[in-house]
Length: 328
Image 1: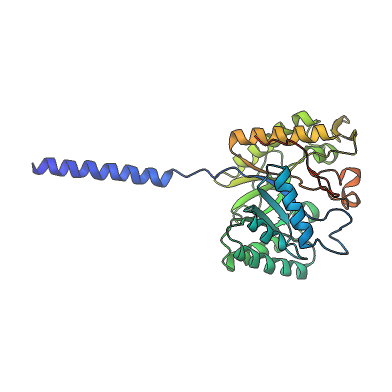
Image 2 (image 1 turned 180 degrees about the horizontal axis):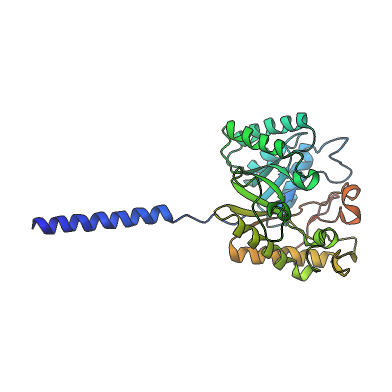
C-alpha cells in the first residue's frame, strides 16, 4: 500500500508539473490590430506653421472614420500642439491608439515631446496600447539622432511607462540596410518592431527590387514582414505604415532599377492594395496600420504630386471615406 500511495503521489506531481510547464510555454497570441494612421492636419492646416487642429476638428474626423470605415484603432503622430486631445477623444469612443512621440533635429522640442509622451501614456493606459520614440528618424537623418531615440526610450522606461516601446522606421532600416536583413542596433532597446513598407516609394527610390504594381503590393508587404520576423524572433512585428495613392488619377512612378512604369495611382488600386494586404495579414493574424486615414494637402511640398492622395478619406470637408472598405 505504501508503495502504491507513493506511486500515486508521484503520478499526481508529474501531471501537475506537466500542466505547469504547459502553462508556462503556452503564450496567448495577441489579437491582430487593424489600424489607420491618423493626422488631423487636413484642409489648409500645416504642421510646420500656423494654426493647429482644434478639438472640434479632431472629433469630427474621428467620428467620420468610425462611421464610414471598419477601423477601431489609430496611430498618431506627435503629442504637442494640441494633438494630445486625440487621446481623450479616442478614449470616449473606445478606440485603441499607437502613439508616436515625434522626434526630429531639435533636442529642446524633443524633450517637450518626451515629457508630454510620458504624461499621456500614464493618463491613458487603456487607450494608448503602444508607443514609438520617433518615426523614420533614421530614414530622414541617418544615424545622426540615434542618441535622441535612445534618450526617449530610456526616459519613458525610467518614468515607469508600462506600454511596449519601439522606434518606427522603414523595413530597410530594420534590416540594417541589407537585403539579407540583419538586426538593427536598436534590437535590445525595443519591445516590438514597427516597420513602414511602401512599394510605391520603393519603385521610385530604392533601386533594389523589381517593379511592384498594385496587384503585387500585398505580396511585397508580406515578404518584407517575413524577412523582419525571421530577423527578430520573439518580438512582435507590426507594419506601421502601408498604402497606395489614389491620385492624381493615372499618375505613375518609374522603377529606378528596371525603368518600368510600375505603379498607377487611382482609387481602384488604392482599395485593391489596402484590402488585399489586410486580407493576407488577417490569415496570418498579423497587425498593420494603413497610411493614412485622411489625405493631407500640405504634403506635396515634401512628397511631390502624390503626397496629398494617400488618405482613404478625403482631406476636405465633408471628409468622406472610401465606401465598403473591407479588411478581412
